[in-house]
Amino acid sequence: MEQMFLYPNGVRIYRFPNPNLHTFRLSLFVPAGTMYSPEAPGITHLFEHLTFRNINKLYQGRLYALLNRACLDFNACTYKEFLHFEMSGPSSQLALGVEVMSRIFCPLALTPAEIETEKSVIRAEISENGRRNSTEACANRLFWSGTANSLPILGNRTTLRRLSGKKLQEYQQSVLTCDTLFFYLTGNDRGEGVQRLQAAIGALPLPASPKVYDNCAAVPADFGQRDCKARVYPSQLYNTASIHFDLDCRRYSYALRTVLYHLLFGGDGCAFNQRLKEDLGLIYSFDARLEEYCNIGNLHVSFEAPDPATLKRAIAEALQIFQQLKKPQALDAIKESLLLELSILPDSPEDLEWQFAYSGHILGESYHTLEDVARAIRAVTPAQLAALAQDTFRPARLCLFAKSTKSLSPDHLRQLACTLEDDAPCD
Image (cartoon, rainbow, N blue to C red; front, side, top):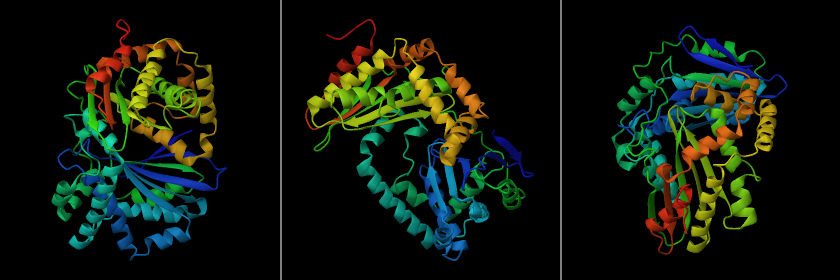
């Protein structure tokens, strides 16, 4: 069962222990990112990088040797709506893990040259990301057009240039606030993790946040009125597609959305893999994601085909999969699979943390035990799933993006999308 501790300075720590493991995982979640800082895209990601450089400097350049010797893994990731620091390793090394994590709160004390070095690293990352994820980036701009979520998490070369040391110090103070950030501790902490964190963090004079972090994304102007928003770009090498649907997260529960996602994309037996790969051999793999906020979301999948004709057929088959979910489905198998996954979550501190930290304290679901989650999954009915599919899988909620080596017009894509109109099937 999840436990919550509130330190004297207002910082929260959530703990979900498993004393049968030999490892721990300690994470810090900070509301931040482009969704909350549209005026300075990339500042959260740069702050993430500089935090590691700053901690290494505090350890006189010995941080990574120290972590390697202790078999500790210290990483971070910047999302659109939060910054996630994570530390994991043997339970015997928890004290060192807490000590290193506490240095996140030390003021940035880097020289202009050190900051510029880290900016150079990010500029290289931007170049690499641009080559590998250009399809995803274009689709993201298309779906989130006109909102902060359309901005690149990494920023760009121009925005990086404008981020001074002073601005970054001010940013650190603005996001490390006692009433917004929280820690999550899973695995075997030998009962000492909460006390060690309180000694290191609980008395820090952290300010309260002047901002409201409600995890509600800005709604695109045409959200729910897309009329099959379609874009096609020429490509010399690739034939790719990215299918996006608007989701109403206030109307449909987290458990219902989870069942839908796993039915479509979870595991080798999912509808997408079975139909497009195993049965028809149209694609080799696909990349799916459920991007969720407290108000709206984005269910999307992307894939590559060997040629334009196969791509067009794969898009048509994919849309048929979505269409078929508008009829009540047998859910016993997918529920059994999800419940079995839940039963082994305590064996994976990382997965357990994500289930409860993300769903409970970012998306705001009231899950505190594994049984809470299991109960919500069991309660999902075929009729509820069909209602979600009927509301979601239609042209008014569809954005369709493609790159092709031969002519493929937006009108072609819209013609394919008309199969999602229940009363107007295509010829």
